[in-house]
Length: 82
Image (tube, rainbow, N blue to C red; front, top):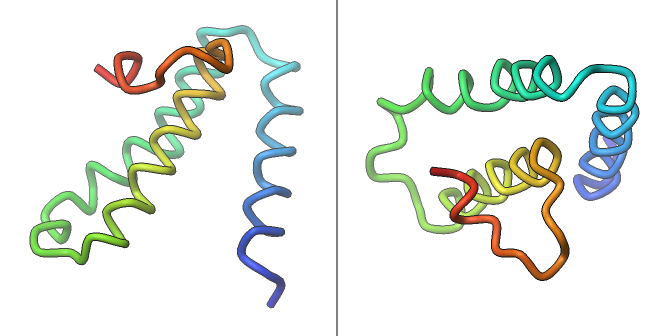
C-alpha cells in the first residue's frame, strides 16, 4: 500500500475534478454524504479516542469545508463548519 499522503492527495485531486463537474449545491450534498454521514455514524465510538485521532477527524472536516466553501487562503475555516 502506498504512502497515506499520496492516497490523500489522489483523493483530493479526484474530488476537485468532481467539483468542476457538479453544481455547488450538488457537490455540497455529495461531500456531506461522503464525510459527514460517516462521522455521524461513528459518533458513538468517538468517545474516549486519542487526541491524534481526533486531529485526523478534524483535518477531514476541514478539508471537506475547504472543498465546499473554497475560502481564501487567509480565511479561517472553523466558522464555516458551524
